[in-house]
Image (cartoon, rainbow, N blue to C red):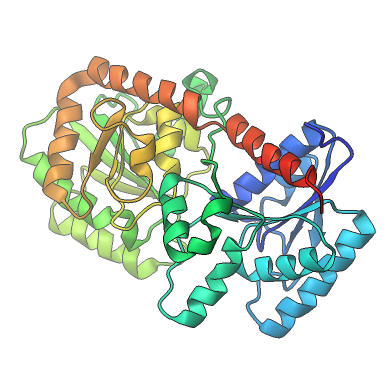
Length: 387
């Protein structure tokens, strides 16, 4: 690729721990590896250190996340000055409010403009649809799954011929069973209060604590599973409450009402997700709203753990039903329970066969390296065409 010496500016409101932020860092790392300059305009956040280690430069714009129209216009002027001063060759926006600023700046400076749809935006009225439309105004519009691409085509048909699907990727060096030392598993098992001699199968639901991730349905399914005479199991909810204390209390009450305190444990935020998947025998992701990609299914698959995911959204692009895991209808605790019992009854060897198939599929289709290569190819193509 002819990116050596080029300068790419990615624009994202925050550098927290989300998928858009991770992808920003991964693309910056790939840019540096091929000799390009990687700039990131952002308010900043807890991933700033990782961005620096990737070889990128953070350009802090304090009000970049605001939806205030006056500030958005002001940010456009700031970004245009950055483009001129740093000789930026292409601008890539990853969120709506800063994308408006980035669009106006890129057009003013006559630079290629790329957007990535990292999620599916609801549009309850024409004004909201117009606000969302900035993400469909790129010279190339990247969708992070076929599901997302279909949503963009439906909501913004004028962008149909500019959509490129680039699935999010998994770092298979980090998410690899061989990379997890026993001490990491032991430390996490202790933090999760698992018995040192635990032989029960661990069913993991890794997700932030919010209603649409399916925790209520998982509790109802666990209640049914207990009556199915399946091999011994325990369930772990691992995820940040993000201030939703009322929801957390509701789940604790549901667990107590179903007398599942000895079966289900809520462990909070997990800093070592590869080790978490390494401790799991089964991973569930019973979301009752569509996932735009399905990071849990991809990361667990990379760790050779079978996943039960929801049939809505993009998880079905990662999971091959019945081969690498299972997809089940949302809000269907009985089906979820039956499917968990199926995997429990297969035993460790049966689950390993399915997990190995999941790992192969992820390594062939959903890697960070593939995402990086495809994204840089988009940049290369746009910068190689006449302006």
